[in-house]
Amino acid sequence: MSKVLSFFLWSLFVIAVIGKPIEGTAQERQMGGVGVTVFTERNFRGQSSTFRRDVSDLEPLGLNDKISSIRVGRGERWEVCEHADFQGRCVVVSGSESDLRTNDWNDLISSLRRVGGGVPPRPPAQGGPYIVLFDQTNYRGNPTNYNEANPSLPNVAQSVTIGRGAWLLCEGRNYSGRCVTLDRSVPDLETYNLRNRVFSMRPVGPGESQPPPTSSDRYIVLFDRTNYRGNPTNYNGPSPNLSGRAQSVTIGRGVWELCDGRNYRGRCVTLDQSVPDLRTYNLRNQVYSVRPVEPGASQPPPTSGWYIVLFDRTNYRGNPTNYNREMSDLGSDSRRAQSVTIGRGVWELCEGRNFTGTCITLDQSRPNLGSMRRRVSSLRPVLRQPR
Image: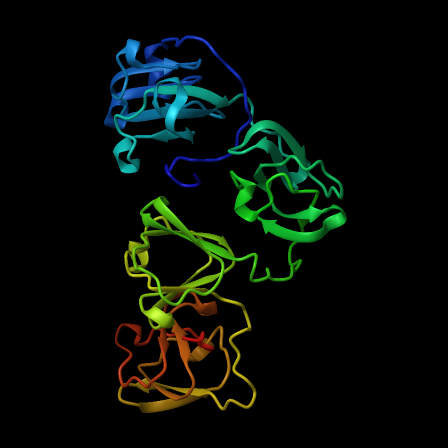
């Protein structure tokens, strides 16, 4: 449940509080006060109530399925649920949301409870790296702070907050075994197959390199609805023939190429982070093949004779420039190409450096690059997967 609501800021400590709701003053309700303030209308209007204790059923208070906007006190985290007694679908929220319709939670909340509050964890002096491990998922349970390397940990971590910096988490003591580098918080370490398996960790210094993940580490999840909802389907390797139903995508690990044609043809986009709505890339319900991208692995065999020629005018006119290898940044030649000759092989052309942004895969020449005209900033040979 990583991005269901835009105001999910996952960094909390669990405080068990049980009791009855307390109405706040008008000023306290307006500013959110200490606790959570709910409103029956959008934009923090209408009937409002501030709660500082758990509420297992909003029905007796006249607020069941009537909440349209919400504010949470600074440093606090509250769980809201669609049924009484904290049943049904639940999410942890912080900050504020002026219109719950945008996240499909309008008029759905029936119970709520505090799951974190008080003073947030104090970062170490001098702004150094720090990390918080929790022994339950979704940043619950007992938190333990670290600001330096630890070669031997109890294997109890299930979720992690990255307070500052990047951290290497390993499934073996003394930083051995499979390791994962994280620079952002993770509500469930099962995402990386590390739940209850972190035995050592250390901060990763600037410029420190880590071997790229093996193919078994890489995975991607396609959802048939936006905002990571609906039916998820996991892939950890190339898949040349998909249904084309994906509307959002979670990049679990690695860099992935998504194409609107089968066998990695047509227009392709390279992603290294999750996307809540593939319409952003004009790929909603248009993903028909996916595959992991390995840096440097796309170089053609030395004797293949692959090459490509870019022209700065249409119809193969103007100044030609030949390439026979991967080019992550075309530099001064960037954004000049208007037509292309595929001398030999299959090539990917991308509008961003380092093969980012919109990409197209070509196995034949194009007299006019159309929407990619004057937009090619990187290119590389593509070694086709077997059909």
